[in-house]
Length: 189
Ligand code: SF4
Ligand code: SF4
Image 1 (cartoon, helix red, strand yellow):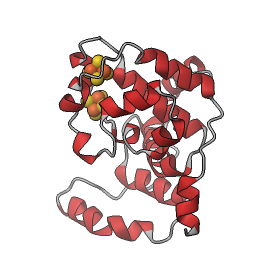
Image 2 (cartoon, rainbow, N blue to C red):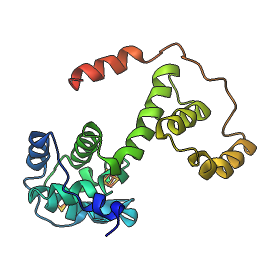
Image 3 (cartoon, helix red, strand yellow):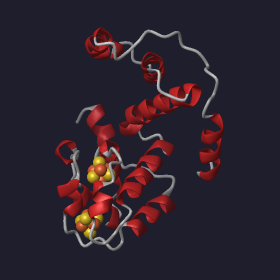
């Protein structure tokens, strides 16, 4: 077994087990009907369906949960939450799993986590996302010199269509600073 495979199979240590318990409480009344899986627009790309993920959460299978990419592909559309016959807060439960993974710095989730953080930092600075600055922050955070080349063709196409503009990065006016600070307070960060 090579080193990558060994790292993938290494038991995952969650330093916030009580937070996983909170997610278990959110989905405790699940009857495994599968409506959430049938409703999810991103299910095709997930390695486990939402229904299976909730089963794994109830069984406390944290290694499988956090090796999976299911929760990181949730786009918070709320379809599953609206349609769940038990009225469970499924979108919030997905968000809670994302937060646990981000807090624990799980390597599999690192890419998504840095992507979100870079996006939000640009929004915090300017009140809206500045695409060029956002991607520059993301590439810098990823510390991968080859990553920008993967996005180069897409970036050129978007620039050609006028969807992305060259803008000088700046600290901005911190338009949403107060809102961000309040949310951090509420989340106890
Ligand atoms: S829709 Fe609700 S009850 Fe049905 S499987 Fe999904 S979480 Fe469980
Ligand atoms: S909220 Fe997330 S898990 Fe639920 S249907 Fe939308 S993308 Fe799928």
